[in-house]
Length: 218
Length: 218
DNA sequence: GCCGAAACGAGAGCACTGCTCTCTCTTTCC
DNA sequence: GGAAAGAGAGAGCAGTGCTCTCGTTTCGGC
Image 1 (cartoon, chains in turn blue, purple, red, brown):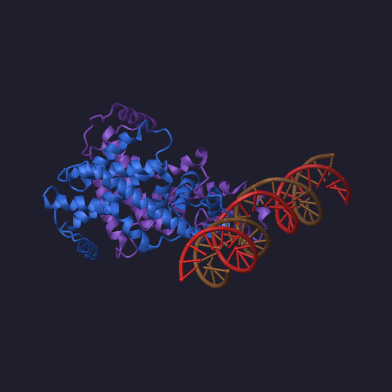
Image 2 (cartoon, rainbow over the protein chains, first blue to last red):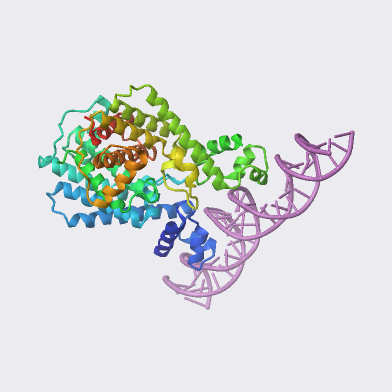
């Protein structure tokens, strides 16, 4: 069972998500193709296992990185989250692509199993913003955003997560979240071009600074 | 030939990139599977055709949106580019995924055919920043960025594109570029969750404002 | 007008995929 | 000791990309 996930991850890394083949996994395990169905109901279920596994590994990486940062160093925590995300994505590009790239055709991740681990990173980010807001370290105003329906949606999020951060900070937080994964995706998916940067990490550091700025953390 | 691309795009939209099947395209054209190889050398070549087609369509959409904006309205031009990108991505999510999502396993887009159309959008963005810089509308300093190798890489980009914008603006421009596609990808790929926002466009408008801010356009 | 060449399409076939079914063998448990 | 459960094997179905050979149609030069 754990062997299946392990071999599955190897194949994911070498072949990619859409080319992940149950038969090949079975072969690597010394099994005939039908025997694999004793343990996993379908290819989609294996994908789900890999998705959950990936989210957990990323979550663990981020959590580990956060332990080295003082909890009142809000900017430092964001930097740590961003760096850990990027580092993990570069080590596991195929799993990253599975989680944050194009959806695999014909596969819909079952929400009940994936939303939990899937929200760990953004949860950590939200924690930082909330702490920073309550510590008075955020230079964003607390005026409600327009239109009203957006403000309502943000209020619902605030209630769900028990936040005191105002509309603008929640919106900027979501922006920073999306922007972070945009930066990582561009690098992992090679949008910058092959040899444009001798050390893409240099650019990423500057991008992280822009992220910190975007949420009003001077 | 153009029929193949047309049917291919339909299949792309309904099935997704990795599930794109030459046989199915041939069937829709009333051909047997082998006959399709008269016109297209392989599945990868069809993908390349679709990639170029997609880049061109996105580029056209962005260009069309820019025509309605005064050329000295720098923020307005960025907003127009961002909105046009998002709008096109929402109309053609499968093609968007092909261009900006996870790479299709086993397929490498041939640079000589795709880099040209693939850089149209970022090219437009760069134009705006350059114009804004030369007009003195950017509130970013012109100090070189650290480390020096990053500054060198940015200088090479500046030279290639004939820019006068300083390090920080080029870096921030690249950040805004990545962030824009991060925001669009999150929406198109459903990372925000299904029914979190009654009108995701509201949030996007706010994100665009953050983009404009990020490049120092007040 | 004829004839060769090129273009076009059909069909069979190979190796691969996900998945289902039945069959056999082994282990476990009572 | 015998029943039940677990595990794997093998055949088979429908689908895929792609290659090969074969027959037909169309078109240009003489």
